[in-house]
Image (cartoon, rainbow, N blue to C red; front, side, top):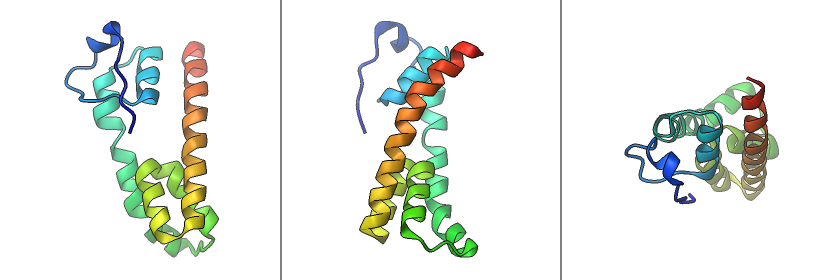
Length: 118
């Protein structure tokens, strides 16, 4: 987890957040959003739920390919999903890491473009 020192104009909106991740910081600034809401609420909820549900869901759907399971875990559950994928197999962990990196890159580039369109 990367620590970032926000600029003074962002620090006033960050409230009680102890740390700020780079993608959350830029997304909140570009979209003129509340950094504390982005960082404290929307960031941790989906990955935790996804990490809990990915294995039972794929077992129920009959998806056994470690590459697909790892990619989905990294895409949906980020770091928690990648850690869980590495526990299952090295192949799943590698694909989870690739998915997490691609998700971060695409989010960092597309959100500012979409924010300007809105």
